Length: 123
Image 1: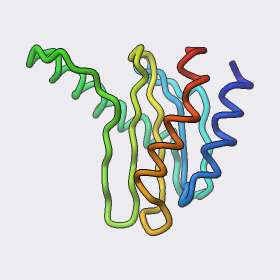
Image 2: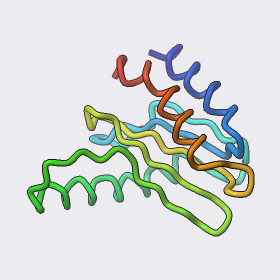
Image 3: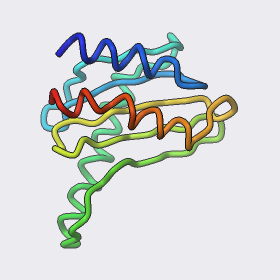
Image 4: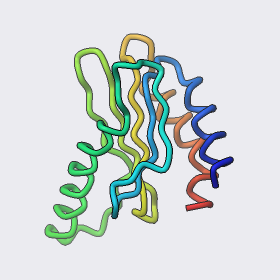
């Protein structure tokens, strides 16, 4: 599993505008692994706060009786884009932050979907 996470992170680091990434278990809030290109940006702390966003959205979908699955939650800031990608199993989520000046949202999401395939199989 560690090899799969390492390969995933190595691939995601090549996404244009990459800032940080983490893979976090939804139930416990524990990060399986993370990496940042900016020492001032703590992806584990960001994931801990975004875990509450994920839990709230999952509860809202349940309360509304929707038969829908969350694929991702995109948060657009003035200089960054944060993507919270929830696994089909709802066991974990991937948190990815990119610099909006250097990233293309379509390419970023496409690459993320490509790179997460092996994690989805393993977890």
